[in-house]
Length: 368
Image (tube, rainbow, N blue to C red; front, top):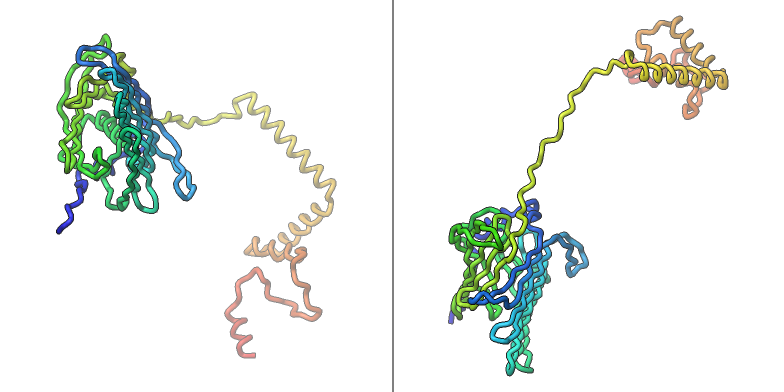
């Protein structure tokens, strides 16, 4: 019997994730709060979402910069308390490094609780699920090869991805991502742009970009959720298809705009006429006199230096060599402490180490 084909993300989804840039994601760092209201408009709870920069320590103890996402909701429906929370660490490509989610419904008779953990470990994505019904807790563990999870979108990554779509005001066409269904199995997740709409946000009217996400489980029915997004990624409204009530924002947030990078100022070079500036000219004369006095004091304390320079100038003017630099090297080379001692018997015209070797001398040495 053949195994069912494992779902995969397509090229459009992978290309969209690869197009993300840290500068763009940094514009999406903010927190927001929405209120859950019933169909009759009664407040029943609230939801908070926070995305910020963070640091993550992996299994080898290495620290890295990442995206930190924390979201949670708590509400009361039909006198039953329910809620969920998500805490996740993501790479700059929205890959899950670690995530912990918790969902509960406190039924009077059979309370339900579900926990899911994702962890990148040894090139694997380890998934641990715990499910409680009444007093019994069941735990299961699975893992997926990390390389085959390209295009995977966790719950935490979904919140960031929606902000990116709102910021760009577009949804990747025909993109198919990977996600986990309610049973912890890999499935496909798609996004569809439903256009723009003007809605009431507090006392103001605002245009929102509507995105519908659908998670298609291979065994269950598809789950769809609609997100009404403001231009900077703030969530104005969230509606889960088939669920009573929705989450709405009660006050218009301050919309963020992309910072315009101004070109650096250009300072044109101006000629400095310091001779005409009395203050600069006075400083020049003071510094000149200070150097003159310093030089004179040094020569008084070291008369041998003046005698040495005088001897060199005398020999230079007497010999008048064509190469003054080599002549100076030969003259002062005799005073070097690192110079090898001269032999007792030597030619009256020894070859200077500062001059290139004469080809004639090479020929003469070879004949010897």
